[in-house]
Image 1 (tube, rainbow, N blue to C red):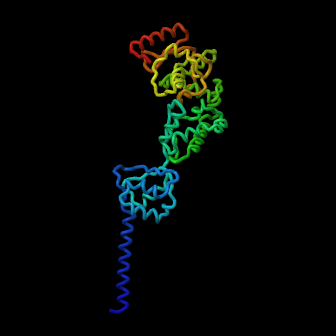
Image 2: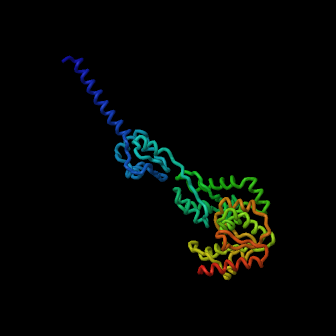
Image 3: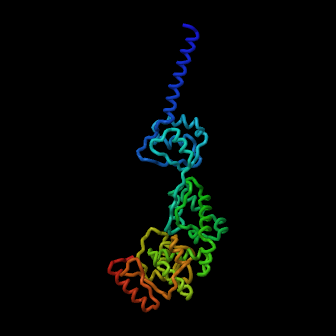
Length: 346
């Protein structure tokens, strides 16, 4: 056999081997490499993670770690791990998996109806990487609060309930800074002007809105309730809002888990900054996070002559309103008789 033929045969063999190797490699790269049953999952890579940490995170969801490791190394991922929340879909190959781990997916973070800043920190901390302690410390940072006109009593007023897009691995400080921007965007010139028309700053309007929010779940009734409270304030009367008394009871006992459905006369005599039966004007801070409808009710209240209201027994969830104390006492007795029949003790 001639040397030329030998060289030709060797070349063919080498090419064949290379082709086979190429097919094997391509198969390793582009064959499906997942083993979870859901159509998609999210993988959370904490801040400061190393590649070995990622390997542990993805191992339960990947069929062949060797194939994944090979692609990760070739694609330079092993030395460039990115923290965040990453969407992985069923049937992805190793190339797609590594690519997916470079695309940080935003979280649609939602919150509303929190009673305290501590509750809010816990709610947010369950949705993004920073825990409730880090978040709370950033919210209550003394320099931040002073620069933005807040204090520990009213800092909850900064948060406008909504759904926000943030990255899972955003820091507590960056999240806080985003919230102050959202607060300023909400309190535009038009809303500030409406608040000033009622004699309020944005924080004061939020405090009253929190009371309106707690008084009624009926959005169509909130402007009327806001009108009643404004009537009392302008007349120099105490607000006499039962939700503030309930809040004072919880705050005094440091037990916000208790359920209080009934306020008694002795409760109204309690000495506490949040007891609006004993103190004239607004309490020191919000008693909850008011939603947008409660805020708008304070900014655009119903103009009425009502001074009093109590829960209705004929239209559950709504209230009966009165101009005179005599009329109110009749409504109040009707409600008191009804609640006694229900056996509600507290």
